Length: 181
Figure 1 (cartoon, rainbow, N blue to C red):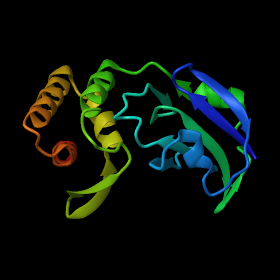
Figure 2 (figure 1 turned 30 degrees about the vertical axis):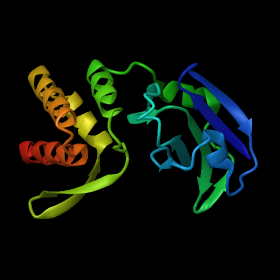
Figure 3 (figure 1 turned 90 degrees about the vertical axis):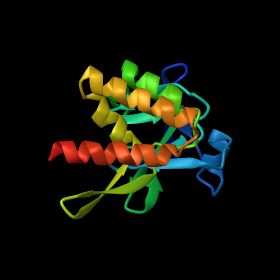
Figure 4 (figure 1 turned 120 degrees about the vertical axis):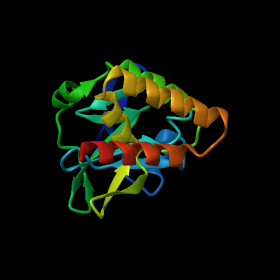
């Protein structure tokens, strides 16, 4: 099966011929903790869930934050198939220019055990919304500098006092939703 691999350390994309077995993805990352992302149409993106705690380099695939290496395969319904996207087109979607707010926040978060893609719920007008840490980072990244500074200062306090980073992130998500009206 044709797969594509993004190496964030070398900033290269490689075409791979892999045989999908039960342990293929785990072997690729040498880890049993894998995140599965479905933001690329008709594709599955696999990443190492340990990439944040190991301070692996990041990139954006479109607007999707990817930490560490990624393995991309095609998806047709529930079936795993050859990757559809041409290597050159994938390269055009990747941006290795990570804003300072992301860099600073990821450096702090690497000291915790949070996951970028694990969802949690917040309330907006009595409706439950499922969000994740990646959404919180995106939202605060577009905020003004003072808000970004507040976010980072409070995150540092949470880490220093060994409070729950997950609760802090959920609180910040709720504040962002409330501010949005």
